[in-house]
Length: 50
Image 1: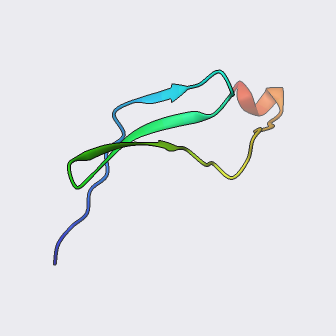
Image 2: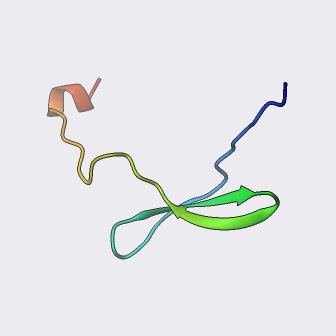
C-alpha cells in the first residue's frame, strides 16, 4: 500500500487576507489557497490566554 505524505513548508498571507500554501504535486510546485472553512475565528479572551 502506497502512503501519501503532505508537508507544508511555507505559508504566506497576501494583501487580500488569503493564506497561500506552496504545495508540491508530482514534483510541480502549485500555490493553493488554505481554506479553513471560516474567514474569521472568534474566541473569548479567556480561552485565548489558556
